[in-house]
Length: 378
Image 1 (tube, helix red, strand yellow):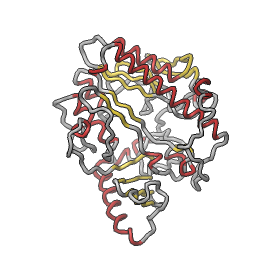
Image 2 (cartoon, rainbow, N blue to C red):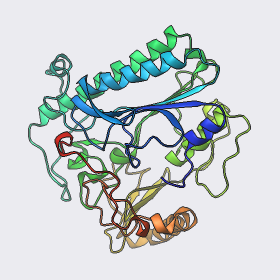
Image 3 (cartoon, rainbow, N blue to C red):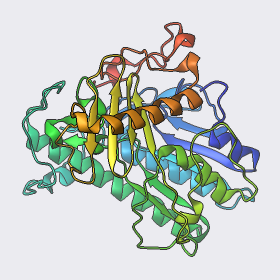
Image 4 (cartoon, rainbow, N blue to C red):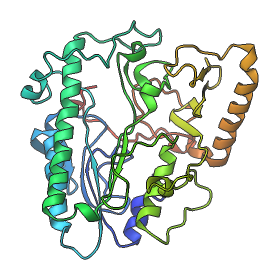
């Protein structure tokens, strides 16, 4: 992250006070950075849910109680402190939920409420041939996963209630999104992209929930089926809150503010390019998805219009060779334009255990963070 401008840097330069509560996972968690003035974060990528170790004011502290509640408590304190300040605020609330561990790590009353749930949305298919491990105690895992989500939902409600109490709801833009999808048995996988090796790019792994809410400005109860990318979030957010903002040239993504505000006919033809796991890269349109694994494959092509479940790999069908050539050309052109060679992860031997070392030749073997053994369930 050194030398790279974050949108919080731009917000701070425009008068915003920036705070974060929860998971950072973008470098040295012990170092207050990216123009945040409030910094309450996890020391690494993983944690236990009860009595978790956190970083507060530069010091490691054990936070008693349930982690999701403690993150919310801190976020609410930030809101209370800045509600009456003349400057606007930005707050990142990064829950660890619903990450593993799921069993014996969540409020028991919520877990028990799922005793009779059939979990019809989580079909337990035969283990994927690339699966890195198929779990036991499926029902208990599902109960814990759903309990983690439910507890998180309840805490999001606490934040919304506090905004209402502080009379900030109508002047606050709320963005709810996730960093990845997750398979709870779909495709025979437990996990996201790193639930298999080679890593998978199924929609169940990469599609994320995304909600933006601002009463009186963003149409309510509206579902948009536009194809958008994480690259579009920064320009959209800054375009929305900073009227004079102009997206820096040379960066990917574009603002979808007009679409967000309900202006018809403003949808652009987006192609999502997703690079999550080093040498595994993907390009996706509404109709097609192509996955390229450097250097030797296996590669995949799915016709999403006819095969939304991604069951039939057309990558070795001669009649689709032209489609593959076109999509691979767009994929590689994108990374030639936007990837920074000295931090490029295309040659990294990512196995699915998570990235502990910095990527690219500039890393020189330096670890991104040092996980604490007693606080890392993985």
